[in-house]
Image 1 (cartoon, rainbow, N blue to C red):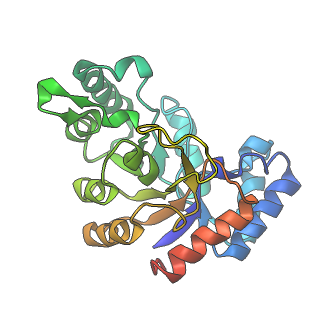
Image 2 (image 1 turned 45 degrees about the vertical axis):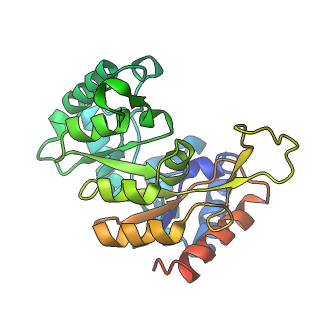
Image 3 (image 1 turned 120 degrees about the horizontal axis):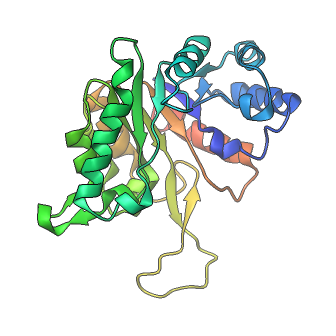
Length: 264
């Protein structure tokens, strides 16, 4: 089991080659095994330059992102980085309001990945909270259930985000079990209630992103579910916003994951 960091967490720190190098070095020093998608490309580095920096600090790329329709570029990028797992685009907002919208998007995803059958590529859908909308005509079934049931199980997996599942009122551990056989990467992101917020109105919870182990999500149960289902190769830290310096936050997260959750 490996731990990576999601580039969005470090989006303000990788604008040029030296910043990318410094970021990779710091991640390596903290004990991370890799990154989810490379960071050098956004700073203008060639794939070869970026890969050289990754190798210099012993980091791997666990997944890639790009235009799924450009089959040639996707396969070349996967070959370069050794990452044959790729992210899928989120369902458009206008399609989230109905069962038909989710079913149509599931069909579109199946068509999108068809050209990759037999290439070794696999794809994963990353949720936020909107996919957990409940539909009365399906006895409360969620949009996420529809995507799970109606997408190609051989090519399409799911990258569960623990924070957003919890924000939607779901139990992330339960969803890990529902995704058995179709989850290879999981986002570890904690949710806390902001003690500084003066809003104390019922129903208006001032939640905030938090370091893993510093919030209210039950990561012991989530991790137990991950071990139970098997097949999860990467446990990826993502924190959209931090109140501490970002590398201090990342250290808190990975130390908790290594020393308390025993993800090794």
